[in-house]
Image (cartoon, rainbow, N blue to C red; front, side, top):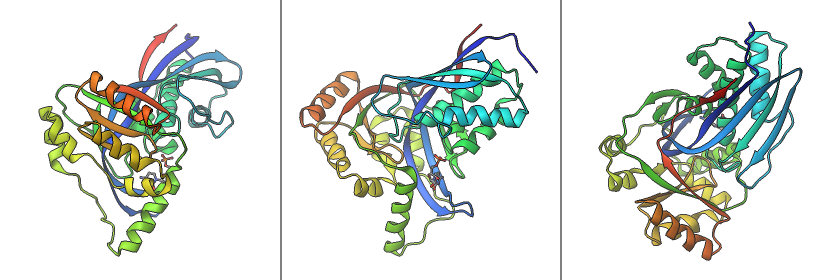
Length: 308
Ligand code: C5P
């Protein structure tokens, strides 16, 4: 099992959750989800070059720190593939980041997805897409979607995916307020809030069907109406800077705004890039956010850009 390739470049997209309905916890402590993912055109680009050992370098367009040790998802993905295929090969891995770090947009998951696809090529492991997605799911619930891309329904833990038909493109302003939210902590707070409310969590949470109509019909008003994140209230409680961003974006004329995944990035649905820029200027002027990015969805999943 060896290829003649010396270098493979793969990019994988960040995502937002247009719906995130959270249900009961399973035996592994994972929540059942009903979610709609949309990949956006902010990419993590992984370059894998043949080498004796595994090593990692990171460059970034976005602020923030991430671990470079064995807890990094790039290195964990490489180790997992080595173990699964019983290989002793190495690679010099370089990641260039465009997705906000620890922002609820699946940047780490995109890193893992791009790494699995790149090393599958470089090491000629010959695994098919489904097997790679299965390995990805072991690294994180959002990894299989970063491989698939576009817009998809996610059920189970978010790893059972079905592509959704969409019409046209959607423009998003991604407002990054700074600060950090831990995904497990946000889920924990969500559980506490649900428990205190006395309402049991659904075994199989359900989506608002109107969101699928909005996507297939290209209806921005209906999409705005159906954007929903069950984790938002927990994220608001854990990060006091967040609710003001959602409120201000809507006051500044956005169709709608919601916390992306477990946050703290806020995804703002806008008509076009000009509106995105004007809302971004308002949020920056009021010092509500640290960084604003404009992105379009849907975007393709992990894809090979170059190999030589
Ligand atoms: O899979 P990922 O590493 O993204 O998940 C991080 C944490 O988020 C998990 O350890 C778990 O606490 C929580 N989570 C969950 N249910 C899911 C996905 C994630 O409780 N479906």
